[in-house]
Length: 418
Image 1 (cartoon, one colour):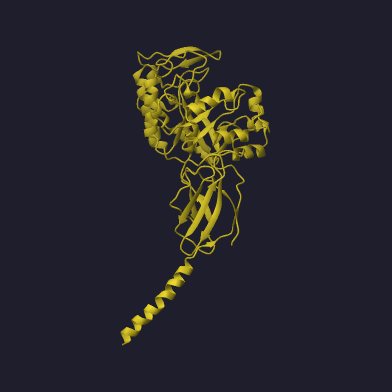
Image 2 (tube, rainbow, N blue to C red; image 1 turned 120 degrees about the vertical axis):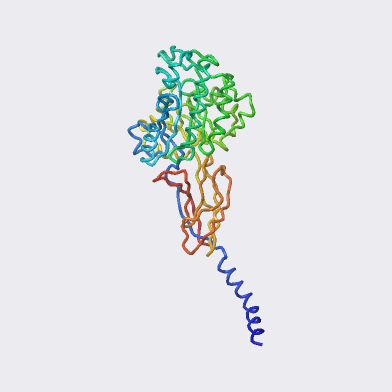
């Protein structure tokens, strides 16, 4: 009889217990007020690492050119200290780096390592480019081809997951911009053959698992294999345009964006540099109507830019304008729903920016991350994230392992409690 009474009591109590547990786990709206007031990590106006204004300017990115010869002194002798020093300096300012590896720069010797240049059958070309004596590599030499592939294998092995590194830019020709418009342009000699360019692109796509690599929009020309090869167009490379806002950009540059696929920005970053064709291209880059009638904010949205190199802008514009222009680039998150219970939380986020974030970023409540990342969330899209913690006073943040100390991904929100 006692056992029967106890079991009956438990049966009677179960519905009440379930109601209490359900009530304890009911989601409730959480009041949330927040505003994006700064340039977001991995976006905005980028300055060169040598710019005196780089420490105080409202930027998140720093740009630098590097040569292979700065790292490799002899066959299989790699010394990454110049990269380490550079990345540590950039990260110490709370920024991330855009590195451009190149082999040809107007007015300079090539960036090919000395041991390669010393080979008996390696023949470089020295010729005029922009009225300056310029070195051009011997791309017919198999040792140079193999070295470049091996270089990026080693570079990626060391830096592919490094948060100090935002993006890598690669290429051939003048400034690695995929052209020799002034000088000895010879496929297979001063410029890599189409076959090697194909090998190079596929090699990078296999080598970099996280870090996004970018090539110039000038790779859309007939001297490169991309526009005519769908399998190459399917590779996840980003694009940069180093004459972004010049007078004839729509007629001359924009078709290259189209040939390399205009929707590429959905999976890989788009960027570039303000043009130097005319003085006004730099001087008026961020003026209300731009140098040629198109405001920068309009251009940034049209091409879904994550960043633009604007090293001269501290000379011409205020910090407020540089910050505003930087905030017109890349992603911008807005939290449109935040509900929590004792056990879990729901967060709904939309992207009001012009491009996605290209690395994992997770909404987190009291430090507990969602299993769903905001990576790849396109402008206008929404994403719901379920987080396995809650509470009465939950603190919402967006966390990413691809940030350096001092960087924070922020968000807009204007949510009432009910």
